[in-house]
Image 1 (cartoon, helix red, strand yellow):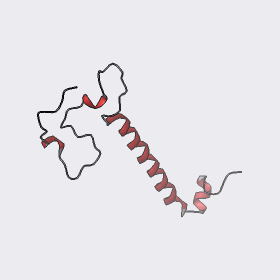
Image 2 (cartoon, one colour):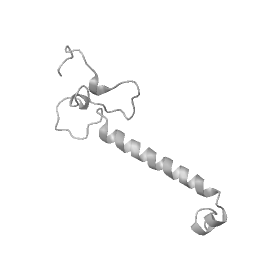
Image 3 (cartoon, rainbow, N blue to C red):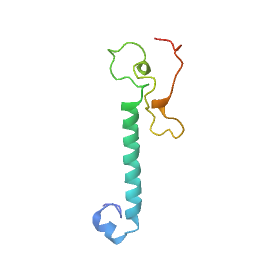
Image 4 (tube, rainbow, N blue to C red):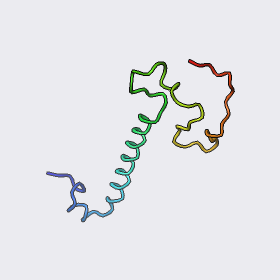
Length: 86
């Protein structure tokens, strides 16, 4: 026994459920994409242990790794030269 609305034949009988499945499926895909992007692009995450020091010291200072930053352009950002080298 299958729940109504979970097969193609029952979706034809209940077309109002189609937008629900599209929105939920799109939200799940977006959440999976964003989680994967955070795992790959975030400088705080280190997958390889052969590097020395914390993972965030391997990134350039002016690299933009945030998904969306409306107020700041990191490529034009100037940082003080007295930052410590770790």
